Image 1 (cartoon, rainbow, N blue to C red):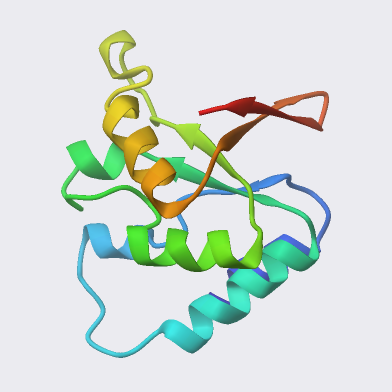
Image 2: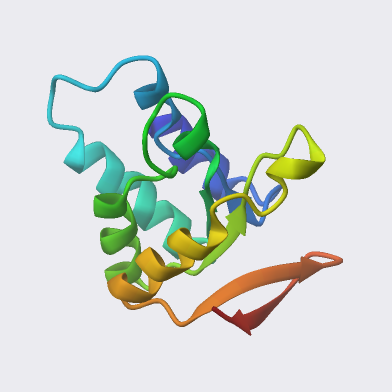
Length: 125
């Protein structure tokens, strides 16, 4: 999470994706909330968005990246989100977006980001 915070500060990206990807292989056995909080602070401070990626629903993690608890924290921090499916085949494009949008709305999100030329726009969920 320290490297994520550094990446958020480098100015080279607009979106942080797969924030909690390691859960795909192994769930943490220690409390990472301070580290995650530090990363989220850096993401917010640098006005980045979080990619809410549905590939975890299909590829072993059993939930989106990042998990709903992290997304709740991100919402409280004012971090916008964008949707991704990490599609490797046409059938995976926008896979499971309906249930993910419902989850985001339950958290409180009303919009998703889209980008063109590194310029952010919001669309209704």
